[in-house]
Amino acid sequence: MTTMMKAAIFVEPGRIEIDDKPVPDIGPNDALIRVTTTTICGTDVHILKGEYPVEKGLTIGHEPVGIIEKLGANVQGYKEGQRVIAGAICPGFTSYACQDGCSSQDGGHHAHGYKPMGGWRFGNTIDGAQAEYLQVPDAQANLSPVPDGLTDEQVLMCPDIMSTGFAGAESAGIKIGDSVAIFAQGPIGLCATAGARLRGAGLIIAVDGVDERLAMARQMGADITIDYREVDVVSEILKLTGGRGVDASIEALGKQETFEAALRVIKPGGTLSSLGVYSENLTLPLDAFSAGLGDHKIITSLCPGGKERMRRLMQVIDSGRLDLGPLVTHHYPLDDIADAYDLFSHQRDGVLKVAIKAS
Image (cartoon, rainbow, N blue to C red; front, side, top):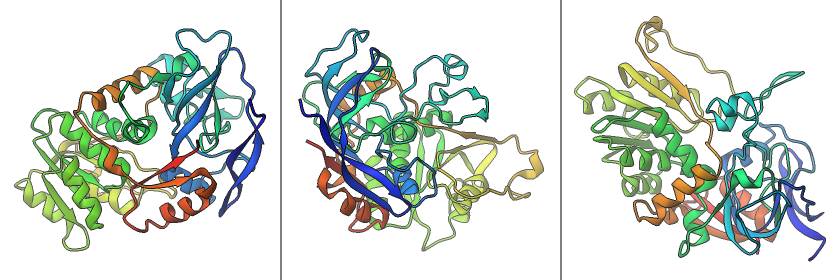
């Protein structure tokens, strides 16, 4: 086997470049996978812009589809040559938070305080998936075999986008017949829309300002789409619900404007389910917050990980309940990932998700 590989490396804010790196060594609890397909996430763009800090020289990316190249001595139940995915969040299931049922928060308290998002290791605290090879820690907890007959593109959303979007719908506690408004129809918002449909929502309202995304939202299950460029979104949603407000709103962008609108449209006792990554302080308007007396729930979710979560998501796809293949709008080889970042970060050419072919 080769000892060097190509990897997309964070050089400095504004620069992620392909460079050569040694193929990772693995320990007894790890696996080495040869990455066949990966993708770029909005969080990677935050890293590129310097809005989320990572170490210089780190390999970026957290959405791997690949083939097991090598298994650590302690990893049972897998074989080399098997097609697998691993979640963007790859918990070790050893921290207090993780064992208390919150697998994404597998960081726990350290000498310097709590480390949030501790389960997110790929492309954050260890080398990530935008490379030819990837070390998967705690492999027995995190590797999930891909069902026969499913393409890389069909399961490419499972490690992060689908898991996160579905978490938004799950955290919202959507019941059969509920009304739901979903703010922003990027890849995560589209998966939240699909998740709301699968949970049985009776009215799904999707909000965006890009025609292609509104069309895709209808494909994913939205009953009504609203273009925020054309109408006052809050008034329109209140009108559509007969003044009652929606049972739940899902915020999938990470901006003050969308968060505030999502708060303004929920009914008394309603839930705001927040998925956005916020890079500035949020403020709660007194009237929308009902001075703290509205019985509202505001809940945040980070992408659930682990092999059982991945197995469930792939089963939804394998059964034909949902096809997320249409979210993959562009294909690039790993060598051209800088161009793919440029396209994705500037949202050109109707891009939703980019498949990066590593091998």
